[in-house]
Image 1 (cartoon, rainbow, N blue to C red):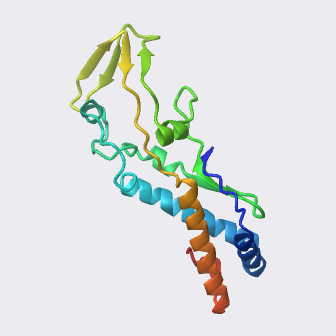
Image 2 (cartoon, rainbow, N blue to C red):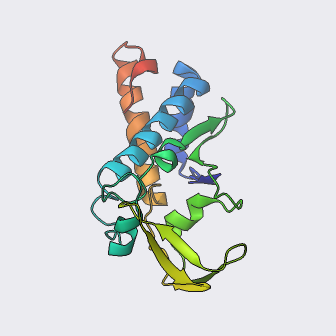
Length: 186
């Protein structure tokens, strides 16, 4: 799975997380942290990488079967593939296991981008793409693709640590006020 890994190394942070895990249980804490990470990922899609994603190329727009110009969201399959996994005791992961038809993981491609690459026809005489208008765009036996720009959706390490800290702090306040932190995402 394409994921973000956060290691809490500060003693004060570890103590706060431990205190909270004792108060509400580690499973609830990890579930809420996972929900917060999924919320961040959803916001990345909604805001087009917080305004940082490069717009789609004109040739890409012409071949999008569902129309629209939002990167990574033509069918919604990639966006909907993000999930959290936890053992309920010591870790939570947020990411995707989605792969291309040929088995290549999509997460790293979109998260980090690619350099230029060549696409060659294998079973057909020429490469072609179906246009939204119903016609075809023909390319020849091979295409020299300029590469896919990075369009990250996962938080970087600093942002992930901040999100975890905000979630833990919000839950600590809730527990300190006598509330049930189980339904709250910081």
